[in-house]
Image (cartoon, rainbow, N blue to C red):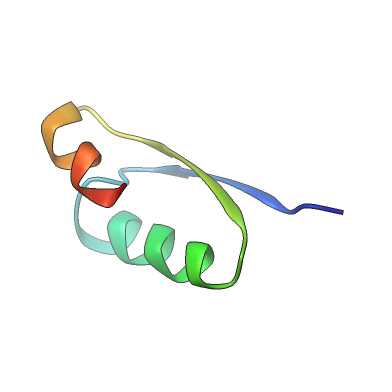
Length: 43
């Protein structure tokens, strides 16, 4: 079973760090942010 996480504020700070940590654990992350240009850097 695949795990999923929804992270708000994923473009910077704690949200960004959490997104990266979850992805390293093979969890599919849906990141939400007000700043699309910074969010694209997480790909």
